[in-house]
Image (cartoon, rainbow, N blue to C red):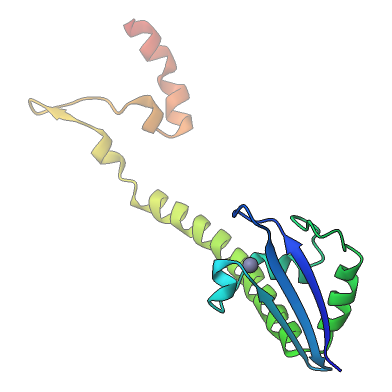
Length: 148
Ligand SMILES: [Zn+2]
């Protein structure tokens, strides 16, 4: 009953890695990869790419088998796990973008223009124009020209 398909995938090592898929039952598809991560039972992109239908790195020439492996995936526990991973990746992407925007807001809120004014001998030195709001920068233009 068990069906087997294998691919040779060129990775970072000189020898291509062996990726072997075994369809054991309607709900079980196993995937083995001979790369270091695969041998340690960890996630690796070689198996994921094939399940994703990507031909990248496949040197065994059996590209038609990709569709067979993808059809084996349907209805398996592995498919459920992959769907869950994809959902979380999408959420992580949204969160990372929101986090980057929030960090910008924090940096903006932390700005204290008074720190940009240096006090020398009790006399305040004008804030460099690049730190002033655009409106006052424009207003300052004629003054600065006159000084030169
Ligand atoms: Zn691998």
